[in-house]
Amino acid sequence: MHVMRLLVLSALAALPAQAQTPASTPPTTPAPAPPDDVRMIRYKISAGDLPSAESILEYHEAEKGQDDDYLLGLAWVARGAALTGDWKAASEHAAAGRALAFSKLKSSRDYDANREAVYLLGSAIEVQAQALAASGRKTDAIRFLDDSSRELEKAHAPYNIRARVWKRRNLMELEGQPAPAVRAEDHVGADAPSLASLRGKPVVLFFWWEACGDCKMQSAPLRRTVERYLPKGVVFVAPTRYYGTDRAQEKAKIEKAWKEIYQLPAAVSAPISDEAMVRYGVSATPTFVFVDRKGVVRKYSPTRMTEERLAAAIEEIAR
Image 1 (tube, rainbow, N blue to C red):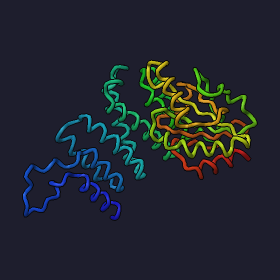
Image 2 (spheres, helix red, strand yellow; image 1 turned 45 degrees about the vertical axis):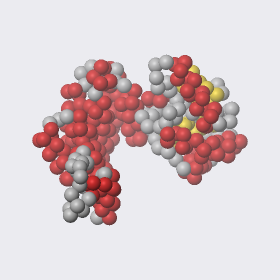
Image 3 (cartoon, rainbow, N blue to C red; image 1 turned 45 degrees about the horizontal axis):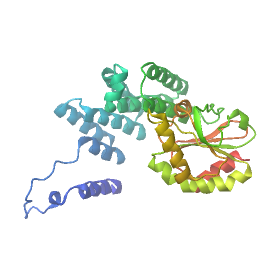
Image 4 (tube, rainbow, N blue to C red; image 1 turned 90 degrees about the vertical axis):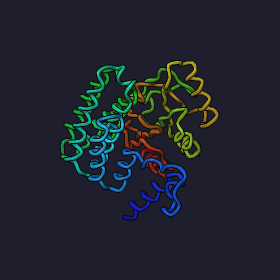
């Protein structure tokens, strides 16, 4: 109840003043429309109220059909079912979402033009894999993700959804497995070492994007961590990729951010590798990967991390 009350208060606070005008003083302009259905679905999911979220989606479909907001709403309802542990509903919503998304994504051009369908497809694939794993069918979940990955690659789907599928796969089984290679197309900073050449040393991979706000806010604790552990033999590698088609312009942006924002020691390399960013599932930046002296991934974290958590993860691989 406390969470729901906070959500309601937040929703009210977000409305313009005339929407909260007392009834005895009629507003001079019409009250704005209530929050959109997708936002309300997200509020209900945040409160753990999946049935209400499903009801809002049903109402939206009856009133407006399966428009773009419906696609986003279905994606959130599927994710909400997974978050609340209702795996039967999660599987059903994911299957419906996957079928609906594919009906709208017939060509690579459709993937570029229909972001809502792409988002729904990514959510549906992730949730379906989670539902399979939750039912004790982890092998089937991995196979499903692999099949989905091949399907997306064949369709020339954009980078982000392919990386998203790999992220879910990595969350399921990358830890405890040999770290995939990072083959650099280019680099800034020091020459990019291969992970094979770093066997015997603990390695921290920091995946980033020069325009990523979360990455920029991570830069100071990362810099302090590098300065603390680099002298102790820990190797830091910071892969990124070209996010635009003009590679010269992109590299200039990467170099500028690398020098001005991160200011890391010269020994730290930033390899540029689209392949590595997809394989490590970097649909969200920053992403951290901690590799032990045997070249095995011990922690995969597609999130920001505090300096304390960074240190704890490094201590584990530096033993």
